[in-house]
Length: 118
Image (cartoon, rainbow, N blue to C red; front, side, top):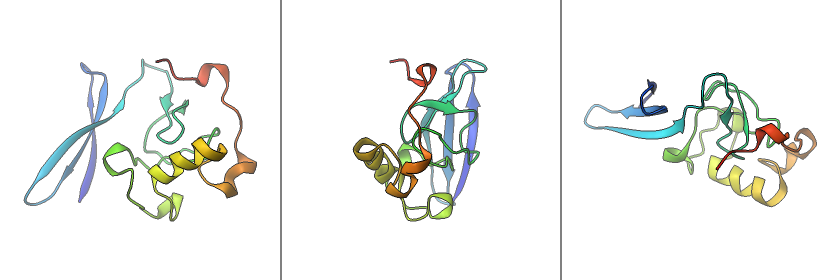
């Protein structure tokens, strides 16, 4: 399976595309912020990331952004987040304020400008 990120300037989104030999699917995961604005962390939702999928660590929840998002939130990918799925990291953040208990000493409260605008 191949993951590819494509920009869609008109819609203001970043579209992920996964293709196999016999099928392909396209899904919208990430909404591109205005130029120069940060991206929302896929775990905690705070605006802390300069880019998506570039292994940046969110200082609010300590999730390492490996590009995982809604389409595979329940998958355990291994890699930088070990045996933790994005869905479990989100539940942990809601419950304890970090993507996992061992990261509690590394996290901080979100800054005022990191709160998402809804």
